[in-house]
Image 1: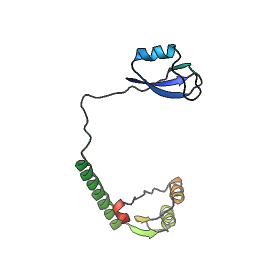
Image 2: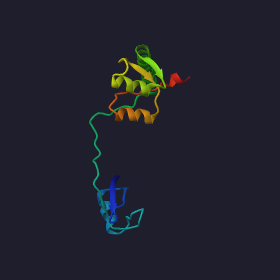
Image 3: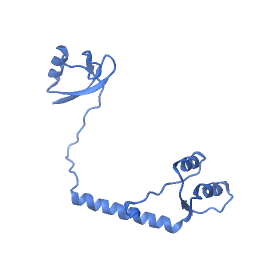
Image 4: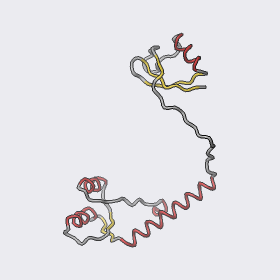
Length: 142
């Protein structure tokens, strides 16, 4: 079986499977391949990326390996959050205001953390104030 990316004369793109390249050519010549959008039978192969494989087979991790990796990732995220909490001052919802004061030199430069809405965070970034979100780990929500 071979999968082709196809395009009709009206510009609609779709894909379909064929038994072989010869089968595709034969079906197109007989008008058996049509666009699913407009039913045009003026269909040709579209440009498509080749399917590449490499010599060695990559095995999917076992459920136990996945669980162990997930546990390691959670532990690393927890340790990172604990470190950040230890070296920063929590300014709560005043975060955007404090970040601007620090950037303007109106307040002492220090590492802070707090809350900001998406719009406030975007505004800070647009103003050239470097901020970084600190996502909650799933365990932090319990």
